[in-house]
Length: 272
Image (cartoon, rainbow, N blue to C red; front, side):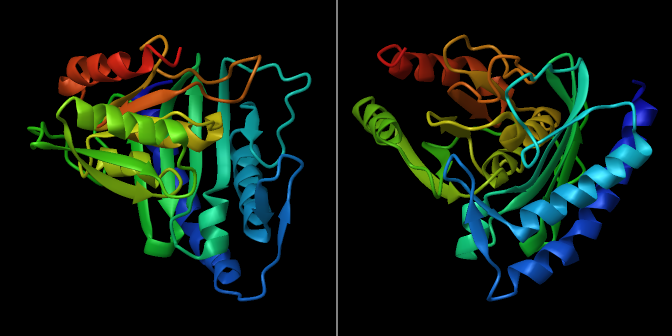
């Protein structure tokens, strides 16, 4: 797909994402909105389903030949990933939505051959959009090389902290690394890296492909990347056997890739 076409798609998805904000916020600001739980125990609200409906309506109308994988309609059984498909999470951070922290996002990514070509992330509560084509600079931040400070700025999950997270922080402390923890919900963690406000985001707990893909495209376009901890290769999307991501490390600045991956390898050798 040519770059001009990708620019057009990004523009359309930005407009679509902005149009979702008032619809989602109506539900968010309703004190009586109801929450139900899926079979896996994860929460879902009317906002998840409305976002799903509106996004799929748009994509099916304008890009009928590209299949869609969305959190709210996905089933693993019989899943045959296409070489090109949309990967959608209408509301990432539903727990943050329910808790009214404001740290929830809408996420739309285009995947080709297992990699995110472009992505748009929207944060309705703060009226902000991040967008990026993997080989280009995102519109919300200028690409720049940062010199790491004495403290390593680490983004960690607000709602899903694990024992391994604590072990990683202890590992850094024992190795003389000063750290500053930044807690964020949803794909805002990766957007924080794209904005160059943090250095790394290690994820040792489970995530799904749709949680990450759009922000991954934005991060790549800002000079960063996300790598599997076991193989040190970029994350892959459209895996036939599982929609879950392996453990990964997201890096704000690829100039620090060698140093960061060496550090994470030293810690993870006892995990794998």
